Image 1 (tube, rainbow, N blue to C red):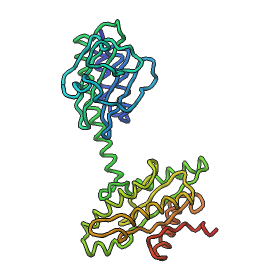
Image 2: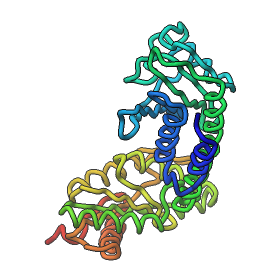
Image 3: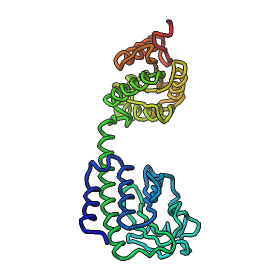
Image 4: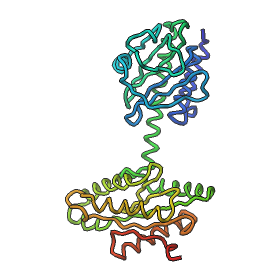
Length: 335
């Protein structure tokens, strides 16, 4: 039987905001403590994140949890776990017809099992504990202890969610919901350092909305604000998952393209320009709203944040003067 001091120590560790710096760190700590507290062979947590169910699996032989997408409606027992708000125990999960065909904790020969649902804002979640066949079933004391652990985990996950929301607010432009100028500078500084260390190319694209003033004068600034938000999503949809699109100024955006040379950046910039040109924004047809773009490449056009932004801004100015709705390269093109 675990001591009262060990239980309190576990809950205090989970309550400490510095103990789980991220959602994944927190869930790993929960699983490790669950294995120890309930003396079982495997533990899983199923949570919903970004509308996708994920399963974190930890066995005694694993150094870190396995994380994988999870089908939360694959059996009658899973569907039941999403509806009830009380613990559910099974003396032999492998013989339970409600769980047929499901690998609840891969690597464990399922015997006794204990499931404790958790209620999170993001969607259904539960903590599952598993013992090998032939091991004793979970006791009422085990159930009470793990129910307490699940309740603490629910509060800790909500704290992580709130913390991530605050961090996102701090680096997100209120209007367009892409990254703001503050985050752009820090991200560009980081990518320049990485590109320099590994001798990689790095490009940035500066984009400015053409004819936005005319649109605002005719349809109002509120409509113009909605247009900028729609454009931000359109531009973000033209880049890779590890690229970054940020708001630079009133009607300017910047895209950071790691591991991308001048020609690659031109392809991306042209794709963004074409996507905007073809798009029908509110109250206007395709081709009325366009963007001009300028490209700067590290280290040819600039080797720090200020010089790289200046190079792309100069190329953007050239695009504007040359007729708008076009892409221009940095000065190194003529070198």
